[in-house]
Length: 128
Length: 117
Image (cartoon, rainbow over all chains, first blue to last red; front, side):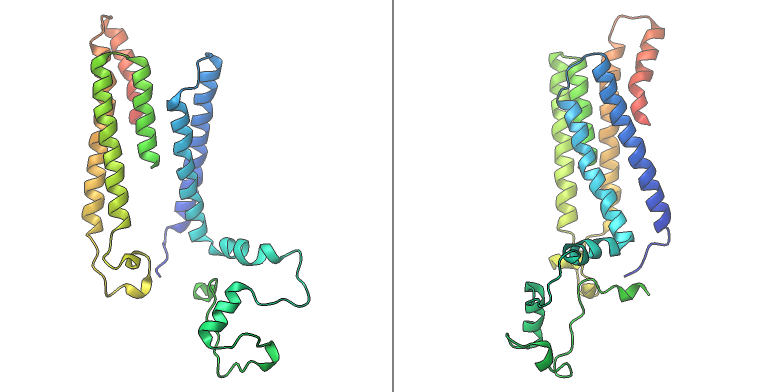
């Protein structure tokens, strides 16, 4: 995967455009409220157009810093409570099934040499 | 979808300002054209390559058939630009049909042309 040499500029530009657009929509609503006009369909469509726009900015952020998504998906849910014995999650069970490890195997009776590990989803070593 | 939402919102705003029958018909045509543009852009973007996952799967980089994205983006952008020009010209046509002084007409055209920014 090739990285974008202008990635930082994209991030800065997207933040600037986001701020300008949000301010513009806020000023539009302020104008409507001050002239006591009713908020019609065109105002709600402008707000609706901001939603995929924020999604675009979030996705470009996550492409630039994928650690955020990996943290949110795989670390944050387990941060507070981690029991001493954890039965393998559905993800782990599928990984073991594809590697041929039978169900019911524990860490002490799995032969790592016969079952090489599958690279996980958030394997970020390519960034090095 | 952001672009199409903004265009449709502008058209609704103009409909509020100029509620004549001719303008409603014209703005309806332009709105339908804009939605058609959006559907075409989304469909072309989704079904870009012939094995469907080749658009984002790096292991399929040598065994795929994709459309020429350069040409696609050129065409989509030109269509978008033309739609924008039509949407900008719509209120100007109504403004220049009003019976006002030339200075006021130019001022109103300037207000509507702030959308070029």
